[in-house]
Image 1: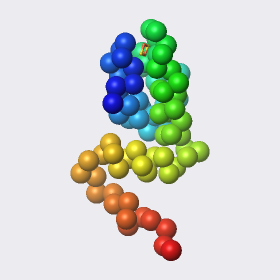
Image 2: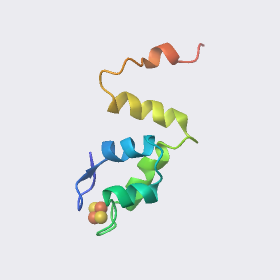
Image 3: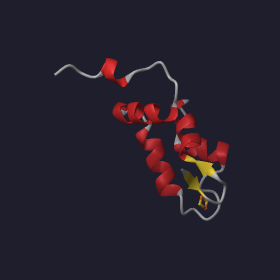
Image 4: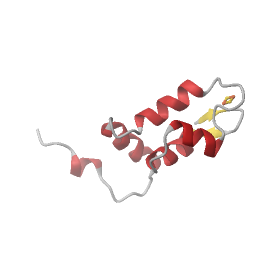
Length: 81
Ligand code: FES
């Protein structure tokens, strides 16, 4: 999904940078997200926040969507009931 229409930056691109350890400001500098009209800033910040270490379950959800063919299987790592 395109998050920043002005710079044509997708959520996947933002996730990839956030998972590499970059914060919003660094991602903004690297990609130029939210540097023109600014309408995408809230959504872009939300995507970065979902990838932060403070919310590891968000990382798991995003990883299953962004890494097709990954050997990582969510069912193998689910907590046992
Ligand atoms: S939509 Fe991102 S700066 Fe305009």
